[in-house]
Length: 287
Image 1: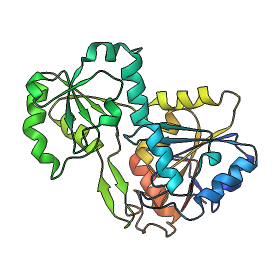
Image 2: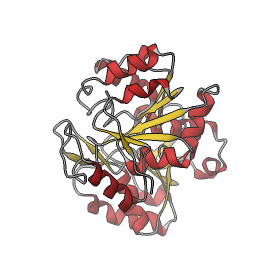
Image 3: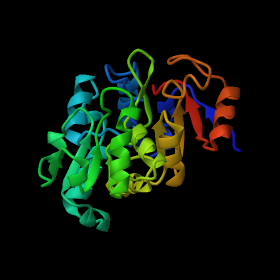
Image 4: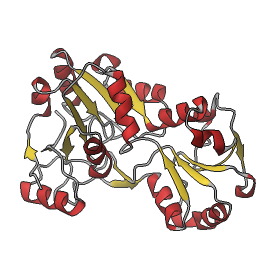
């Protein structure tokens, strides 16, 4: 296994790469505020004439991400494009170019607290209140309470061979208090365990990176930056591009440190060995 190399200032890599694919939550912000130095790093990369595409496993559509980032001081002049898993799913259902969505049906049973009016807009889907009348399951966010409470619903859905479409495949995120929080991907994991079929959009799916390449066709040297080995780094590896793992994100505690503090090379190497996923570089913060 190749050892990932520590880099203190990620934006110093701007001279080596043409395109930077940046994760949002865990790299640029913590859901409540931007990480110190993130906007400056983006400005430094842009001033070098390089391109930045933000890629998030957010269940929200792009307009919502733009609004949220702007409130954090990460303004549209700091990046070229945004992709979210929610937007990619919306486009797939709307355009019907994928035969999977041509067969999916229109009646969706929504799992989560948010009824997803923004996502449903323009899709012609019909939300239903009973699994027995649904064509598929749609997961945007987590419901209140433990995921185990969904077990009867998931068993009923599996009995009808319904597919679950997940708008955010992440398993965990790290919140503003430096604590790990569950994400909708855990609902997909629970459905898989009862034998259900799951469809995701977003990282680590190769189609996300292919979309980035289409948006920046003249770039040759590409770097992905993220805080998740299983999503950001694995996705970059599958796409054949280099990557930086930000260790202040969801792996901080596995690395025996805390968000904001530097990990050590031994723990990074050990984690990469256990997961069989290795970035090109690692750094504490995107700055």
